[in-house]
Image (tube, rainbow, N blue to C red; front, side):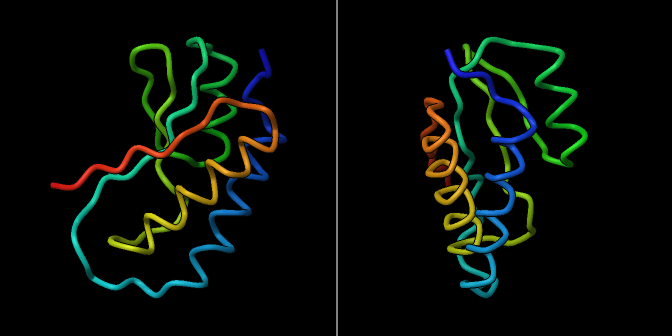
Length: 101
């Protein structure tokens, strides 16, 4: 299994920030979209995520990552989509969980 680490986390953050620049905060629906990364719970991974400044939680064998930039609606969605795509490039099992309130 590929490990979620500083390199993949940094690349995912860069991709999300680039995506955020393409979409202004549209003030649309409040959503809680996250990236779901299948990975065992690890204090090392959690330290890396914390150092990177990402909000996250672990549940049912996966980390759920929030995007690095503020925003709601489409701006949040494009960030998590970019993060998931980048993590997949690093051979991690990453998907987007679309959640609206």
